[in-house]
Amino acid sequence: MSAQVCSCSSRPEPPVAIVNAAAEAYRGVIPADRWHEPYMPGDELDREIAAGVVFWGHEEDGMLVGVTVRDVDLIRHAYVLPGSQRRGIGGALLGRLRRLSTRRMLVGTWAAADWAIRFYRRHGFESVSPARKAVLLKTYWRVPDRQIETSVVLANPPVDEA
Image (cartoon, rainbow, N blue to C red; front, side, top):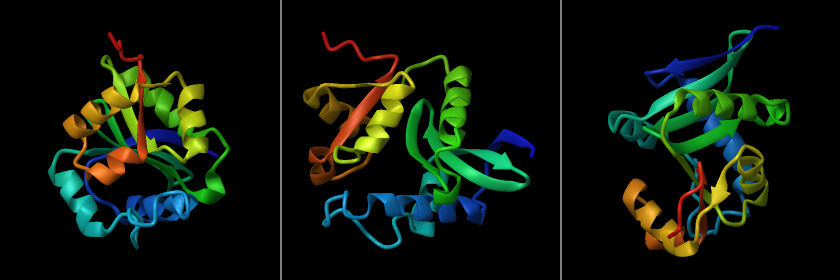
């Protein structure tokens, strides 16, 4: 079995499939007024790419099994196909991105997604204060106030709250 981390600059269909399949774990966790089908429509992905988002994936035997979309040092979406989870793919991909980065990384996720928060904490990310979270979400993400209310932001290295 061969595996590598690769950068993908165009929109292949597998990232949409990975995002939508993995996002099923959030069904019932994401507030009902924020959930939609599909979770990541193709046109939304096109807008992300047009805005400069770069895809990083973990490829195993020619199949893209994990994808992280990042904009500068902002992790926008991180998903692993359900059948490939708990095999270290997400951690390997995150570790690779961390080694490539010289700046702070931020990730936003749903406050009720305790498994996602635990994952990022295991990999050196720390939660920011609620006040700082709101500022960061308004600065780096384009999300409505309702999503800001129901999200958390984690940082690596930690954000100085002073």
